[in-house]
Length: 216
View: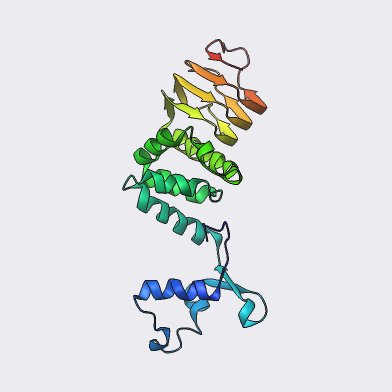
């Protein structure tokens, strides 16, 4: 599903997943199983005829959690090339990102450091989900840690980055895109923006010195 950027699959894919889980290709050996898959698996059905039916999780959170766990399987083993490929397939929702960062914060940071300037290694159509996922991971990671030290963030796309309660030091954003950027009134140290675009900039306590923010 993630490979195709879809949240629905045809019947044969659902059956294949069940066969994989059971370790058997014979669904008929389990009486009535083939006819009860959508009920047993928390699946909702769309489409008319049996040939056109498509299956999706009854709640999207199921998909988000399962996707996170698939990614975590490689991330926790530091198979960064595999995760790098996943970053550009589809844009991850916040539940997926939060679970990844919560369960593997150190590996997430090492992943981000290893892929920070590699968007051009992907086909053009994968650039947007890649940049958005990188931005979401940095956002959640920084809020979880409460700090952003010595980081170089390249080519990330942020819907909203709120640094008002984040300690920053020697951090550089390069070629990043911010729909909304919120900066803290105090505690800013060597925060640099190079060739970034900002839709809306908010600064609390406008009387505070922003002399150590450079590059706009």
